[in-house]
Length: 167
Image 1 (cartoon, rainbow, N blue to C red):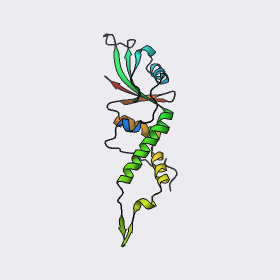
Image 2 (image 1 turned 180 degrees about the horizontal axis):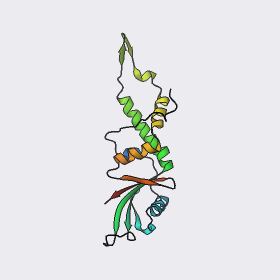
Image 3 (image 1 turned 180 degrees about the vertical axis):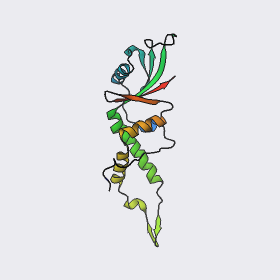
Image 4 (image 1 turned 90 degrees about the vertical axis):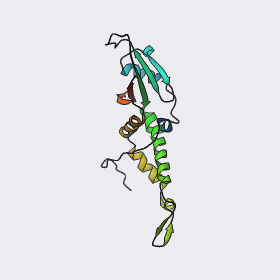
């Protein structure tokens, strides 16, 4: 089995997946998430409101950055910590990928008159290892961006990855 994946470019295309499916088990957003967003967007903590604690979505109301002279700038931000991504989200996506893989395997193959069940010779641990190696932080950021309904990745601060969506 190949153990070094850096020489290959592989990515997962997960059609029809929703963000709710792979954030299951992630702790709700905390004050630390709010603090990081305030620092990242250079605003006051009081201007950062929690919109959806499960999806780690915040609404930023920034009066200090008002360039249109209308009194406020509003946008949404989504934030996940490195550990949340590397442990929970990565594991959830790997499990979803494995389930999809197994659902696409035929129940039986006939090779030269011998009926074989492919599932009997697939090593589940090696398969999960393969999916987990594809799921680097960069790949996780790409997947989250692709299913986040309009959010775009704006960067990383203190081990937290941040997305933004204009309202």
